[in-house]
Image (cartoon, rainbow, N blue to C red; front, top):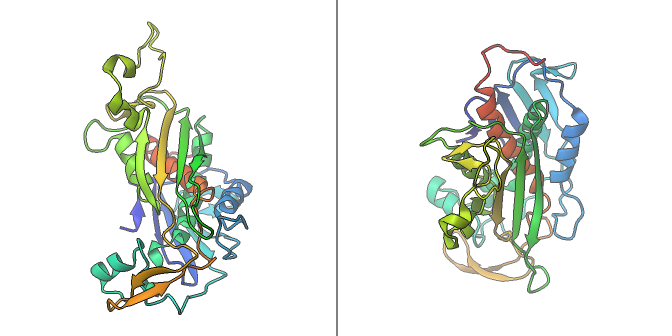
Length: 318
């Protein structure tokens, strides 16, 4: 599955060790002016930034559009793009090592790979394609009064130098109309969860009161409405019965610590021989803050996917 979405779709390919990441966006209506500065800003937010928790890999994340945008405006045809990899280095020392809590073992089980160079699709480098498609979706949504913003709620404290840490991210979608989502198998909340849990290192998803609701009574968790149907509270996080109710959609995503730590850890190689490995400074120590534009991008694609499905075929932007 290299495609996300139904009406507004992203298909991407390439990996962290190749020449480039490339993608195709389908379902974007014609006539949308694309703000390249906004796109560059989100790409820079996701790119390595020199922070102590960030990888030392140097990537400018320069996107090249090959089709679908002419004179800064979408044409309605598929938007094809390319993001070159500019700083590719393969660790020969750790190339044939099963990295603890990484995709090394599961890729071996699924594909027979015994080489971490062949596990490049599991790298967070892939998320650059999500940010491209998600930023265009955010711009389309912005024209309809919908805004999306993510922030870091908390970051764990490392117990030793070179250790990695987990993070909790909260995201809010404002301005969505009521009525988005299907009652049973394609709930808005279910699609959001699917989108967020597809992000590298994501371990948990909740919206509204989330897991706190398990310790509440019904009277505490109700969202009462006034005679004009306005809500007094938003315990349900803007989604009821799997369908948006017009309130702010608020959700949180829990991310585990990055598996690679910068000190010696015992593991095995692909043949099962005991070995000691150490991660390098080319691995992040925390997904935050670089993951924030990725969370926003996935939320935007979900929202646009539901909204663009309401438009008549062939419609152009105003």
